[in-house]
Image (cartoon, rainbow, N blue to C red; front, side, top):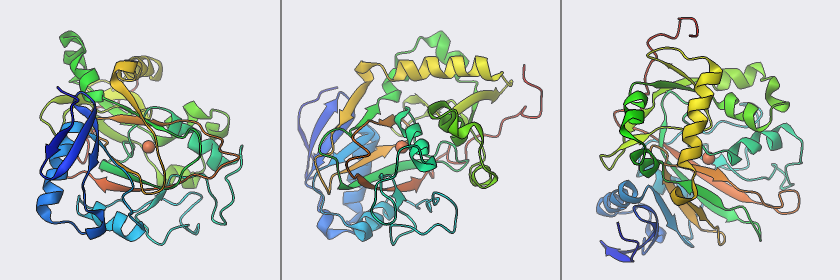
Length: 318
Ligand SMILES: [Fe+2]
């Protein structure tokens, strides 16, 4: 697949890797809501490239939400610290992916929220820990640090395609348990040795088939640092499960499957497909500089939206 600039239905499309990631210019974000044919054309590009970058969109909260709603139903965002926690944003559909407290101060190193955010530096896909998973995330920059803070993206679809057929045959059978607290424990083991009752109740594990069909019709892997263990057709123990899962995460995050998206400034937006890619946050001076990033998350409405129920969860681990 080529990485040459193409012109598609009025947009200028600059691919980043062959078939993965593209910068798209020419979208009239000042006119949101957009005509259905524009939305359809953008979804076609999303299906082809999985990660779309739009520069200097001029979007505000209201149009960010409105545009996202044209792509499907939005997740109502969990509030860090509990349902009674006040929010920085007016919309319940905006997830706070920045490092700022309600009063504009920086989230301090060592606090639970700071520890929680460490998990975002692991390769993952958003909301795989939900039984009703998400298809898209749309992350809009409001304030970016002067250095660092890129988001890395991984072409899971291609990484899966490059696996040997014998491996794919094994993977096709498997159902995986995804657990948000699992990835938090990997990133901050001491802090998340104990998960509060509120936290646990807010995010129960979810179950998804390992191998799925991507929106472009190819097979892909549904994988993330949230992936904890194999639960179907047999239950594997944690160690054996993690060995397989991290062998595959390491494979998917090889340099040939990765590009790093730089945030140039406020208004930049990245729309990625969680069903066929992974991403991770990268460091910046998070005790010196503010980063204000707001994300909408669009529910999946495809054949894998509700995941899979593991057939043998009540059996003892093998
Ligand atoms: Fe994420």
